[in-house]
Length: 118
Ligand SMILES: [Zn+2]
Image (cartoon, rainbow, N blue to C red; front, side, top):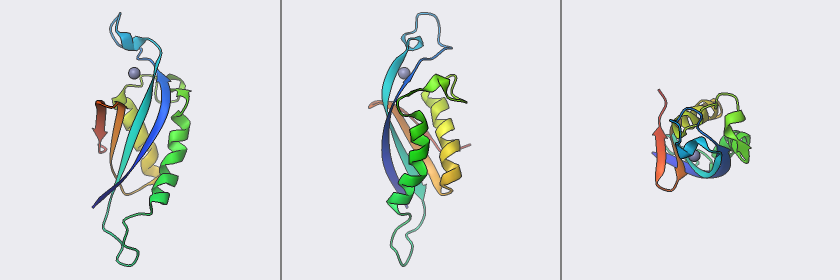
């Protein structure tokens, strides 16, 4: 069973490696949506895979590093595409959440990336 929780955060970024004239080279912001999936079987006694509150506690400190910040200034995010940000999030979240199965990161409602680790 896959259990998930959705988080949002607001961050600014620019993409330093895009071709000249590309609009993403300009400083701009997104309201990102992050869906974090944990895989497991419901505990026979408790009836849940994980306490939603424990999932929140594992993810929120990572989100706090990004929220209302310029992503390019954060270590490991000098080229903060959705793809690089998803890998960065995965590597941070999995240390708090060993059952992590998948993350879905959207930078707009229609544009996003799914990552399940290497
Ligand atoms: Zn952007």
